[in-house]
Structure formats: structure tokens, C-alpha cells
Amino acid sequence: MADEVILLDFWPSMFGMRCRIALAAKGVKYEYKDEDLRNKSELLLKMNPIHKKIPVLVHNGKPVCESLVILQYIDETWSDKCPLLPSDPYQRAQARFWVDYVDKKFYELGRKVWSTKGEEQETAKKEMIESLKLLEGELGDKPFFGGEKLGFLDVAIVPFSTWFYAYEMCGNFSLEAECPKFMAWTKRCMEIESVSKSLVDPHKVYGFVLQLKKAFGIE
Amino acid sequence: MGEELKLLGVWGSPFSRRVEIALKIKGVEYEYSEEDLFHNKSALLLEYNPVHKKIPVLVHNGKPIAESLVILEYIDETWKDSPLLPQDPYERAIARFWAKFLDEKCVPAVWKSCMSVGPEREKAQEEALEFLSTLEGELKGKKFFGGETVGFVDIVANFVGHWTGVLQEMAGVDILTEDKFPVLCKWAEEFQNCPVIKENLPPRDKLLAFFKAQRETITNFYKNKV
Image (tube, rainbow over all chains, first blue to last red; front, top):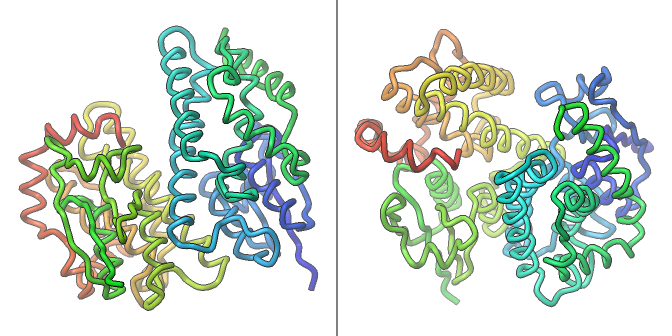
């Protein structure tokens, strides 16, 4: 029986992009459905009744929600190609720890950088740079967080880079200048097909952010 | 080579106790070190968890692992007897989803319902009732979230199974009550009576006294954390 895989997503979502990369890396054929978050589909509400959020992976009619849960599900289900998590339990724990760190810190900092002003924005900018530097430390001399190849942490973090241009424009600062090593890692990831075909154009993301600011009445 | 396993924890912390339950289920010996979180974090804790400076931290042969859910998965993958997570990828995904729901929704809402004041407390109480109702929906028909025996989600739900009762008594609020959540309350009773759990819960009266005495310190400490 052929697998039926559907990804309910929203094009600028960093969390959705994680799933797109993982599915592409594993060579999984799937149907991509872009949601209008102001008018959520019946399918989304049925597949994720608790949170009503994207991304949702629907595999043979069964939904998996929450991007990191989805990533691990993809890794365990299509385990023959391109493993994302390492096999060693300690290294797996490290990857999970850092992804947890990114999720707890980064999304909220990013939101503050594009949607606030003054001192709140300055603090967010500073903390964002500190976070990236911490991640640079974790990367060390490795080409990828996963070592020689793209791994779980790379897949989880790289989508945030599509929002960097928007953060820089809104915050009037340069992440490239502050964190060149992190930016070099981003470029290396973009050379990989499963990443480059899954990430969206940062200029389009900036356009989307400007629309959001207008809609929320943020200057 | 002898295994060296150490847990940096706090006796009253549900996050710390989760790790102890998991280690006990696996029958693994470890050395426990109590941290003084409010006044004096040890040099060891700061060295082993420089990013968050929090407990629990499990140190296995000198290598630290932090964040209770990350630690639970590490324990499950390292000591393969008595598995905590199911084997099937879909069921594992469901378990991880509920663990996240507990930590990101239930715990903060219940905590704020008891420790907060004013409008924040009222909002938290509404949310807590909603989230616990969702949680109860997941349990219907099963003895434990893990099925016939305690599993990953049950361990993560220890806050609901034991701490919630204590906190709501201290705060004088009614959140997890039998009339509202009969299934969840029955589960909590089964959970608390399970031998491996029973031995690893801080005694109710001591926990109540602890929270009562420390209420102000805790509220200030957790103001920016939960």
C-alpha cells in the first residue's frame, strides 16, 4: 500500500520548514497544503483540534503535531535514509537539549525584534546575538551541528535564518557582522538541496512581516 | 568500567522526581545530590548546566544531560529494560505530544493558578481547567497514560498526579477535583499508589509545609521562569 503523506503548513513558518527539509532529505513524497491561518481548513481543525496550529503531518490519515515531535517521527519512520538524530544516546541528548534551547529562546526573541521598539527591542537584539554566539560555540569547528552531515539540530535551526533579513531590517542591525560563523554555517546548509528547496526567500518573509506589522498597527 | 551516575536535584521538584522515577523503574543505581536552588547553586550545577543553571541534571560518567524530558529519553535509550516510551513510532509521537502539552500548558497554568495573584491568576485558572479537561480526554478507558503500566507520559504528568493537589490546598483553590475530573483523579490515585512512584514522591504533608513556608521566595523565584 502506498504511503499517503500530507503536510499542513504555512509558507513562512520556520516550524513548517523544518518538516519540509526532513521530508525532502528522506526522499518522502508528500502533498503540501498551505493553510490560511485566518481561515483554518476543516482538515487542520480535525487533525489538530487541541492547538489548531501548523505544522501537522498526516500519515495515512493519522496526524502528528508539534514540529519537533514530527521531526522525530519522520526520522523513526523513514529510518533507512539520511538519519537526522545520531545513534549515540548522549549525542542525541545534546541535539535534543539544543533544539529545546532554540525553541524556548529564539522564536520569542525574534518576535520581539520585529514587533517592538526602544529598550525592549534593544534587549531582544542583544539576547539574540548572545544566543547565536552560544550556538556558534556548540558548532565549534564542525561544518554542521550534526558533524560532517546535516543533522537534527541543523534541520531545526536553519529555517530561522529565513527570518534574519526581516529581523535585521526591523532592528536596524547586522547579524552577519555580529555572528559571521553562524552565517557561514547557514550558507553551507543552503548548498544542500533538501534545505535550499524547502526554505523560503527571506525577502518574501520580510514582506510578510511588514504586512503583519501593518495588520497589528505596529510602526 | 564502573558506571558513574549522579543526579543533581531538588527534593520538592517534580522535574527532578521524574528522573528519579525513571531511574528506579530501570533499576539503575545513582548518587543523589541535593541543590539549594534559591540561595546557593553549587559550582557543579553551574559547570554542568551553564546554559540554564537549573535542575535536574543527570551526569553519566562525567557527561551532563539537562532538561527533564531530554534526560528521560536518554535514560530510556541507554538502559533498554522496562521501556518508558512505546516502540511504535506513531505511539511515540503521541507520547511526546502529551509530554509537551503537560510541560508547556498544564504545568504553567496550574502553577500560576496557585501562585499568582489578580487577573493573571483568574486567567490561569480558566486555562488550567481547559487543559486538564483535554488531558482527561486522553486518559479515558486506560488505567495509565501508558496503558496497563506507568509510562513516559505518566511520569511527566507527576505534577498533575501529586503536586497539583498540594498546591491547590496551599492556595485554597479548587482545580483538580473529583466532581470536575473524575477520570484524572482516579488516575492520580493509581499513580500515587504505584509502588515505584510511592517510594519516590515527597511526602504530601512535608511538601505542603515546604510550599507554605516558601511561598513568597518561590513566587519571586519563578516569576520569570514559568
